[in-house]
Length: 223
Ligand code: DX5
Ligand code: ZN
Image (cartoon, rainbow, N blue to C red):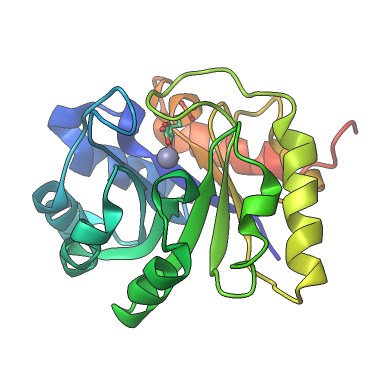
């Protein structure tokens, strides 16, 4: 499957999100990644459904909404109504993960499950056949601009193996510290959706950075 770039607006200028999205799209972004933080599950606050609704009016590509919140079940409908095409929820906060995945699908969005760096791959075992995508956190969630945790590479391979064993073709999305220096290795490990915030919006030219990230991701690692 071809590589998709999900531009994370967390590192963009929040007073000009429309322009940030347009620049990433001109550079070829396939998805706009929207980080929702509640100050409880993660030590940061971002935005809620009203902002997502406004973003959905200007984005031409689908919105990929990453819920880093304690009680995602309460807000699923609001985010789908606001325009989320993909929703990722964290296994760490969900006692009834199977039900939550079904609820996202019933609302008409793609359902993804996110794993923190310390969360074992085995936590996916019982839902691997149900998910539309798996989000592997390669930094501890909460902030943009952190360094990729090297062990994430073997975790991506293990998630891919688990999905394959269960006959699932669900793509793996990798989130945190993705840039031109590691993108090819991440893809080689088995990920096909690369989330990038700082390496796109932390540059002076997000359009060009998006294009360069895709070029880096599609190069063979080590070549
Ligand atoms: C972090 C968020 C990420 C963040 C990634 O908690 O989930 O989506 O924007 O940012 P970078 O690419 O800067 O690590
Ligand atoms: Zn994210």
